Image (cartoon, rainbow, N blue to C red; front, side, top):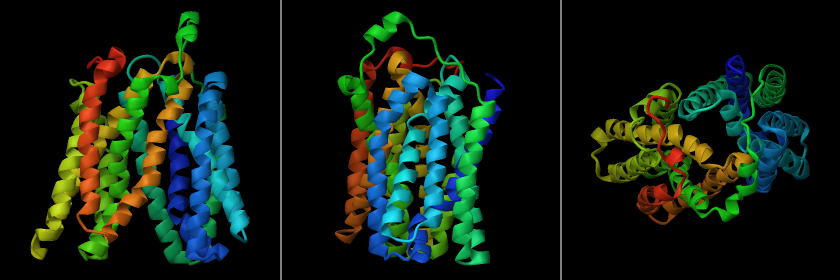
Length: 399
């Protein structure tokens, strides 16, 4: 099992490098290469993405029945099929099929990959293992995105097709590596645990955990897609500032995940997540106040606020999946972790709507995200006593 860990990390790195190459370009590809209008491309990809969310319950059941590795390998094959479908798409119908396959594969992946990481890690808290995997995935996605930029700049329109072809191959290579070199050991489930295991829909504390996590996840997604709009359209800052802010966020996120775990090892997981939510709220206030900062000070001020949101994201990402995994009953862990991914999936769907509020008032999106962050901080504190004690409190020496 120990030898499976480097193979798993290499496979995840390859997967995310390929995703970084193409996912940010999906809409542009549909317009520039397939020939769809912006409206057609946006609608088609959105429908495919929303339909893909229906796969999560299936992913959870498959994990519980067959083990997570089989599901993760299947997710790679489905995503490869979606990438190849994009490569031959010639109209709205083919693009919709490609978007649906890619989205379904992504949800199969997210609904199973954390269970796979947990099984490869073995017994004990999974905070560090999830943090390491997150660092690898973040770094690889960032490198892929940079490679895509260089590719498009140097080859023109043909670069889009090269990027998606490499993306498809990366999925298949990841599947092969997982199948041949990753051998997780599934946790033993006693008969008593099987008979008492419930479902996420009937587990009110776990449903509350999903809801509270959604509120924090909304802040993360708002930062990723909303801050560029704020900087360019509202504050009229130089275009390069957006790239610098995102680069700082990704650079720290890909190198300091385990440091965040170590720094918060002596506090409850729920307390750490509440702290991250409080930092997101502070970031909303600080960043929203940039409109009154003199222009000569605005750029260094905004860079300073980036450190606040980066710290918030680090703490949140380093602890939240470990909390969800530990709080799930072993017999139905797959279904629980798959359901937990709805917190992030729905946040991704809701975030563009929050960003659209900039058209109403510059301060309105900040107020919405600020309120959600404060509500999540209070909510995480409130649900802590109702979650399993071993999930809330991990032994510091093991984290």
